[in-house]
Image 1 (cartoon, rainbow, N blue to C red):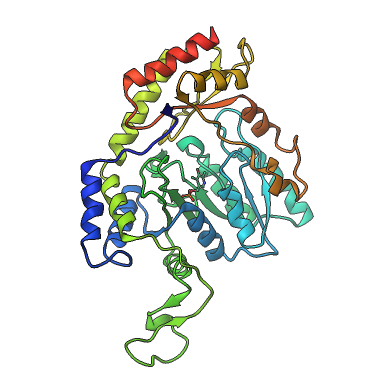
Image 2: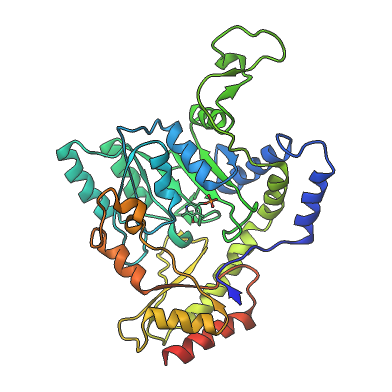
Amino acid sequence: MIPYGRQTISQQDIDAVVDVLRSDFLTQGPQVPAFEKAVAAACGAAHALAMNSATSALHVACMALSVGPEDRVWTSPNTFLASANCARYCGADIDFVDIDPVTYNLCADQLARKLEAAEKTGTLPKVVIPVHFAGQPCDMAAIAALADRYGFAVIEDASHAIGATYGDSLVGDCRYSDITIFSFHPVKIVTTAEGGIATCRDPALAARMASLRSHGMTRDPALMIRESEGPWYYEQIELGYNYRLTELQAALGLSQMTQLQPWIERRHALADRYDGALADLPIVRPARPAGRRSALHLYPIQVGTGASINRRSLFDGLREAGIGVNVHYIPVHLQPYYRQFGFKPGDFPVAEAYYRRAISLPLYAALGEPEQDLVVNALRSLLT
Ligand SMILES: *Cc1c(COP(=O)(O)O)cnc(C)c1O
């Protein structure tokens, strides 16, 4: 089976992890800060905080922005569950903003309309979480302008988008947001097995996130409430978690980061090949708007309205042909957990219509041309 995404692990990666196993520190050593530094350098971030998953980093980001039970958080329905769950961990209400039919990202125009209505009813969000779906950056300038006008904070869920650019801004530099989150799950661009990073510009926000990822404790005398009782002394100043990344994972991530741009280039070359080979088929290929460079985490197609086969039959046919296609995403508001809050089919029609026709084709750095040709030929024989 050719999977829709998978990690690439080199001998250099393996050696890096084994070296850590032989070293003094399996956790809380030098690898995590080195990995954080590499990610910060790659995306122009002032601060980077590694955690044991992007989900944890999203939770910490919401807590650091003081999201609580009285608050509202808005995100895209076309995303993985974690983009919404992070707000629920803090007790906040979640709502969604429908997507743009071309980029499949949270639509800035729909956001503007929803904010206008929310202002009238006193129900503005505290935080909006745009998701760079498939690695394609959202319209961040428009979202940041709305954030200024309506006073909400922005967390970019860039789980798909490490290495992407938006104009002359690198995703992760937080030029248009308060915090950006990356995921290092094995299907993402680079991996630490499980892992995530939060980047930000504000040093106070960075300190808050550092505290929250490690029990809410500090050894920094400047942050302590009481006088030190000796060299062993630390204080817990708030309720935090153990969301730390291990040294083994950070070493893997650090080694993987050396391949970030070559892997994204490879993804672009493969996507260009798909674009050419699939041009005459009754499918909608992913748009690549000018002025943004996608990290191309996914290559999502839609089965065209003129196709002689529906999404289900095409999906089943591809799986039978050994192509491990997948579907991204079941709209989050339609999950049973979220329906209990009153969400129902029809609430976000663009995301729902996209979902009904969507299939993600295999795309990862180690995908070879002969394997990609198998995918193209299987699609062609099922669609013509
Ligand atoms: C993968 C993913 C997450 C969660 O990442 P983990 O590192 O697995 O916790 C969150 N948001 C999006 C959009 C994702 O794709």
